[in-house]
Length: 139
Image (cartoon, rainbow, N blue to C red; front, top):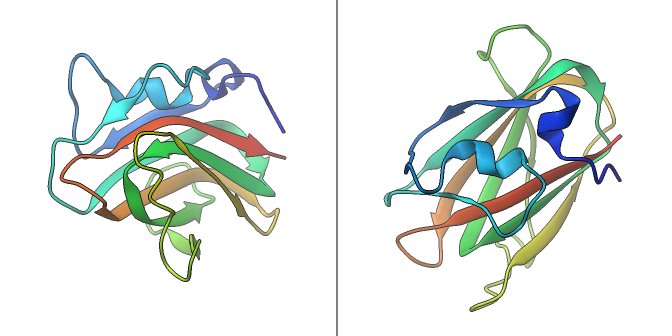
């Protein structure tokens, strides 16, 4: 697994449905679980990560808090449109485990195909707000 922050690999968060100046979307890719992006309520919430160049990804690890249901989609074009489903994370069928006060660490296996963008769609949370602390990829 790549422990290097995604930001140092040329990845960027190019879209996020909500933003708080104290918890900006860029915190997702800084490699630090003490910083985070926080939603501003209501679902779905989403963010898109663009890689500096097409990257073969075999797994994604998401460190989050209060996320109940997550879908991941990808594309291989230079613009962030027309995504293909990769997976709907299912830990207990279609849900992340509720860790109450602790970070959720979930690894989602992908096909290993090349991708330029990953879109993360949080369709439900255990509360009104969720946070994503870190996204790591395994190539």
